[in-house]
Every structure is written in structure tokens, then in C-alpha cells.
Length: 189
Ligand SMILES: Cc1cc2nc3c(=O)[nH]c(=O)nc-3n(C[C@H](O)[C@H](O)[C@H](O)COP(=O)(O)O)c2cc1C
Image 1: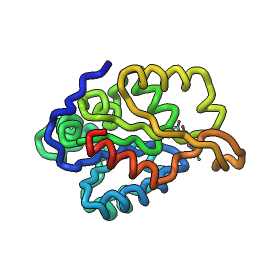
Image 2: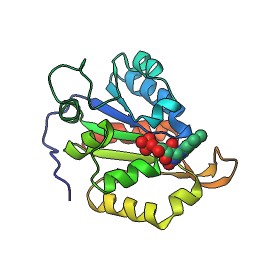
Image 3: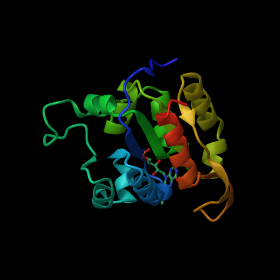
Image 4: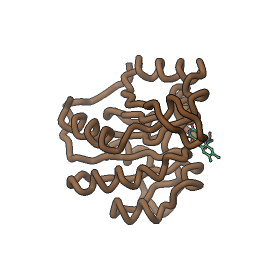
């Protein structure tokens, strides 16, 4: 079980990790919903996520800079991954790809998002989105079970129409459900 610190004073700080999924555009709405509720949001993009969504959009919606690289010389003298992990009251990975789920389950820390997650002691909520075969593949299912045993929380995926023009499990859960879960985690539930 990973170390967690539920007693830490909460400031309504939500760090959103965005991965390279076609569902990445839905994160814009999530950021808006959270900001509308006076929740402070910082976004971390994987390199692949930038193929799907621009830092400019997220920076504008979150009213903060967007974090993209471990080796960011503009970002003060702190190691970015440690200060971001310390800042967050909850980390939400949405959409979470099969790749990032596998890398977190294996303890990778070779990009900013996985390094933040590895060093975080706050709750981590993972909202997967992917093709049904990727989700149902035993290796993904084992990775998910490993993470659940370690105390990571999952929301979704749901069944429905997928971007690959199939119907099945793999759809990102609706923004309202993710917002609701974040609020209940911030409330200590
Ligand atoms: C058009 C397109 C859509 C994709 N959508 C998904 C997706 O929804 N879920 C997923 O797990 N991978 C998806 N991928 C594959 C990921 O982008 C790929 O595995 C990438 O390495 C993920 O990197 P990241 O986990 O660092 O963001 C997609 C790839 C392409 C080209």
C-alpha cells in the first residue's frame, strides 16, 4: 500500500494529468467545471497528450501555466515533480491511457506525470479511456488490479460508443461524474 497523508491540510488543489487519448479534449470541460467551483487546478501534459490538446487551451482555462517537462528551467529552482506532488490535494489522471497506467503500475518515473505520481502522498484518481481490447487485455487488467491494491482509485471506464467507431467498454466517464468524485475526495471521502 502506498504512503498517504489524509491528515494534511487541504487547499482545494487539484492536479490533472492528461495523457495521449482522443478523449483528452474532454479535460477542458473538467478544468472549467473545477475552476467554476473555486478549485485550483494545475495541468500536467504527457508528450503524447500535446498531440491531442494544446497547452494554450489548458493554460487559459486553468489560469495557470501548464507543466510539460521534467527539465523545465523556467520553473523556479524546485524540482518540479516534487513541488507539484506536494502542492496537490488530489491528483486526477484523465484521460488515463493504457500506457501511463502500465508505467505507473511498474514504478516508472521517466516523465513529469509519472514522477509526480510516484512522489505523491495524496489520493490519486485514475480515469481510463481506451479501446475495449486495450482495456480488456489481461495486462491492462493486471496493472489496474495492482494499482487498486496499492490504494489508487479508479473511475470508469464506461460502456458506450468509442472513438474507434466500436461500441463497448472504454469510454471516459462523463465530466460531471469525475467532478463529483473529485469533490468527494477533497471532502475526505
Ligand atoms: C488517434 C489516437 C488516439 C488514441 N487514443 C488512445 C486512447 O484513448 N487510450 C489509450 O490508452 N491510448 C490511445 N492512443 C495511444 C496513445 O497515444 C499511446 O499509447 C501513447 O504512447 C500514450 O502516451 P502517454 O501515456 O504518455 O500519454 C491513441 C493514439 C492515437 C494515434
